Length: 235
Image (tube, rainbow, N blue to C red):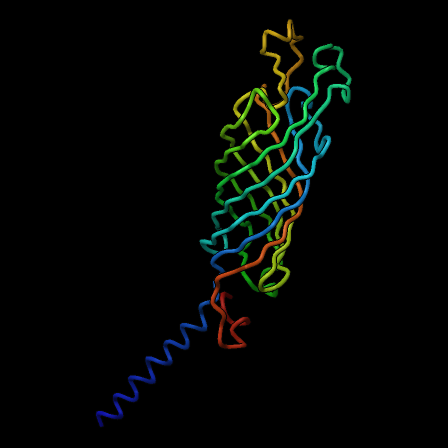
């Protein structure tokens, strides 16, 4: 009799372990690459979207909390440039202003998916998302700004291409805290008397932005043992 109870106990424990392993299918993290273009908003370019795009690329890492929320980090590299000759300026210093520089953007953000997003394209094919947080940028080729904190906001759409692969598109904005990203500021006394209409939409604090596509690979998740589990989990 004791042997029977012991055998039943062992079968129950082993069955529980199998059932538990069948349910370990949540994505833990993924890593991806980004490619696209970068541009800037400021005194030279106050409002023109996608003006004078420079190549931009980088990588990112996501740690999934659940199907709606994730914490992400990114490192992006790109270029920024502009020339007052591209705009109809009557103010001579601004018309002659120009710059070209590169940047390294590092950010950590909290990401929200508008739709429950998982690992199975048969359940959730795509979702739009938004992310916000804090960041830091290193500027190269600008004698007035070497590095500074930024506020990052990202908008995007991701598609579940397969159990392991995501693809998507992203549009990101970075708010800086000075007016010298373009090396020129109407508040600088050296530029002389500035007309009152010479100002950017961002209230004289420059911004930069990037837009592009990405692909990511899902890693460190537990596979299910039951082939039918894809059709029964998380209904």
